[in-house]
Image (cartoon, rainbow, N blue to C red; front, side):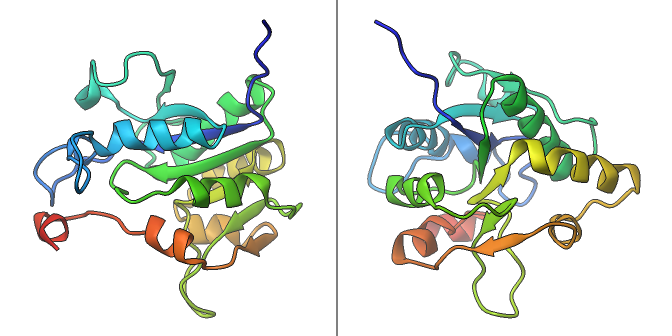
Length: 197
């Protein structure tokens, strides 16, 4: 039996230092369950037909999801844009068109939201939500066209720019509707107080 590889990669960013949280965020337990955030993200991604990939320094998650491919930031030490570059390059090498990015501190990412991103008909280079007309684009829970964005991102990195918003200003970004599933999925945990809330 032949399995068709998914056309969309789920890039799970795990490289943050979690200073404010005090422990690796992806190892926190999701509300009402026994799984970690990382394990749930992997499961939800697979349920949506995406190919999960760990992006960044995944040493804090050793043994948690050992079967997943992992990539280091490119270039190392460049922050989230370095992680995005690594994910885009990996998708291109695997013959995947799109990358959906999420962070390992997002405990409420819903399969429905991932399906909305996967199946959206927009041909824009980036498909992303924003919380209001003047609000910044949300780079996590966004979909990226790997082949089209990679050369633009290389130019942005070469210029020393590190902001997703600066990257987004260089390409067409299409807004995805802020549905209840998208809005819920955007919630993240940055501090212990977020977990209690």
